[in-house]
Image (cartoon, rainbow, N blue to C red):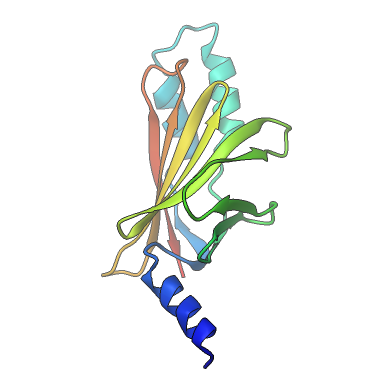
Length: 159
């Protein structure tokens, strides 16, 4: 093996956080999570908030995570892959509906944390592999000044 190949392999092995292709294992009832998160909102804005949250919170069937020394790439189902610098700096990303976000991904111990920041709120996905089960959990937190409190839920995936 060439010295450069060895160095790249060592750098990749040293990077904490999950990689690979993952298939949905369990998901909460997202409709119930959204209903609960918006229950105390004003009756005028509640249906708007619920509709928006339902539209943007999917239990993706498949997640692919690739990491190199310079880049983290995450792809949800067959959607366009999201390319983010490995150093955690944010880049502009446009969702399929045209909304623009600043997205980033960085290692946090053994986890990988992906964040989205938009004009009306944000989202974080914390990817963690349980060493005992080998399952990937994705802890999702949605924040917005319009929500009474952050909305949270966890999805699990198998390799």
